[in-house]
Length: 224
Length: 342
Image 1 (cartoon, each protein chain N blue to C red):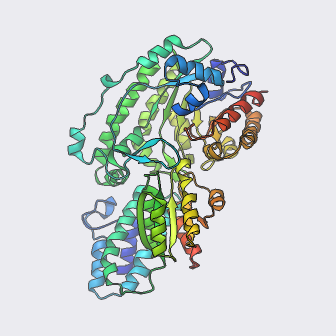
Image 2: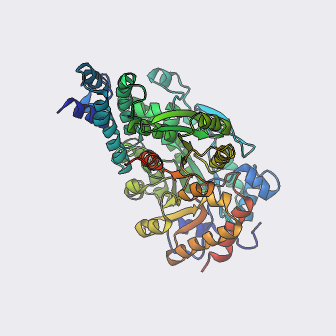
């Protein structure tokens, strides 16, 4: 198996490094961290490590999650494995390179402190090649506005777990539009539906983290 | 209030929860927020006596009672812009137990920390035509909340013995509650609640539940079976991947709350309607945002589904939080009481 294939396999399997006990059958073996470092040391192009190793692996992880073949814990391991490779590759990427698909500003809306789903979306988007600005949880509308003003081309992602807090998404959209910003918005979270997204003027909706990647690409006109 | 529309009949309610042919559609809720109770009742309905009057007045056949207990989990408070209520949330990252050391140091509750005075009072006050549901839950939820979900996910694989030990601590405690409740003659339905799934699928693998949670649920199911009383299970999300376990191994007789975003009532009825009574289904989101006439129409659609085969207790697709429109909640109930009969 080539080095890039091995990196890909380790991300899919969620094997972070040799100290990681997951998955059991890979315990003690080199993981994404060591293999990515090896690829860098061997002079492999960082673009290849990303586009042929790390990024396609997370795409497979997302598909497996959607098919209920793996669940959130296994996806978290894959995301952590991906991140361990990304951390090594990122500093080597040239400024202004075109590997970043786009920027996504994301947060859980005001009044809501849930962020497992939002974090998974961040991980999957990052894994797919997006640059993420995570505003965190309980995010005030003004904070979304400030971030959007600084990044007028960025996508804005909002998450909420409850009917009562998802109402706050509309306030953010209204505030952005009132300030002349036309950043595209996509939303998600347990009570959120495509109908609600349409009703409040959000351009996109995602039911899960993998769908969020597809939706972000669609909104930015990137081929899936 | 609607006591003029229907008198309680707990035996009929039990019969429906056993999925037997019934004469009308009973009402069910897992929870009705105290503020909503106060809005409808005109004053707080906190005592057992008031609880009975409140539920009876709305057309319910039962009151639901839990044992008293407090398990500390790591919680934060968020101010909500839309409601004047502070909510507490469990941490999704770091919990009160992080490793074996914090596990050993944690002041675990034992069965002697449980108290049943409200249940005993309810047993004395409940009228003959109403009944008591003994309810508790959250073995799985408490374990992950005590660890924080990320830590829980990591420990599942990195330290599975810790996970097993935590399930044993919480599981034995909760089973002991149900053993005590099942020993009370006046408790005539058991209800276990624990959220196992998202709207797109289970939170963790079916095998994890089979290994760590279902053995405890099975013991609760056996208690209900021994008493020949219904056993309701509540979980949000899509449960098809563990439906056989729930019905055949654990022995649930009724499933709540059938969130429309997760499982379609008509499809669910087709798939398991011959084995299970289905409870809930009326979209909480619509109860919050729609107009009463829309709620009446939605409720009629559900009544139409149930009229063919019965096996439905009407209620919200989760619970009645304080931010539901009271007029919508009452429209749902009134429609069921007036039109949900044959």
